[in-house]
Amino acid sequence: MNILIAEDDVETAAFLVRSLTELHHRIQHVETGTEALDRLKSGDFDIVVMDRMLPGLDGLSVIRQVRQEGISTPALMLTALGRIEDRVDGLEAGADDYLVKPFALSELVARLNAISRRRQVGETVTTLIAGSIVLDLLHRETRVLGRLVTLQPREFRLLEELVRNVGRTVTRSMLLERVWNFHFEPQTNLVETHMSHLRAKLAAGGAPGVIETVRGAGYRMVADA
Image (tube, rainbow, N blue to C red; front, side, top):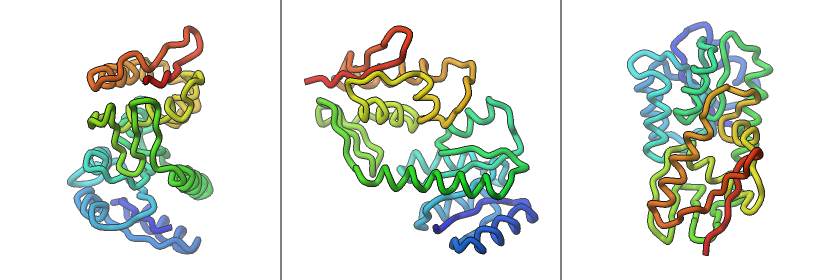
């Protein structure tokens, strides 16, 4: 893989560059958030390993900005902050996974490979359709009745999961795992809040009522006409 490493700690950066190069990956390394943003805009990377606390522009801000600009390069966030709230912040910003320092190289490599597999599977289908709703997976765009509806990254992923399972119930636990990569209960109304925003945007775009609440189970997409 062609990997961008954004890490300002000299020892950690050297360890990552040496270890991943030995595993036959192509590595580019930057030390600031500004450099990371520039490289992601101009380079073709399979994944970025992003330290959260970068000088100049922090890792969260970098990820948010590239997602807003439609850059879908998968991101693994590295941080010394291990609270659930910190993980939520990282994933909400648009990171695909979150690894707390100190970490084992074997786990980091496993997470990179898992992200890469998910991306390869996703690339086999570029468009999803459910009634009047069309998702462009390459450009991360949503259209309802042909009109563009602007969604935040997690709202798009929620809708993607529902459209992929149209007519079937998707549980809250499944959404937490697939959209936020949570394998635990964060004790927040994360899903409910994002689902409310998603429903409102779809309704405003001309597709009201397409997401049903299945009491005690989860949510179900009903394809409209």
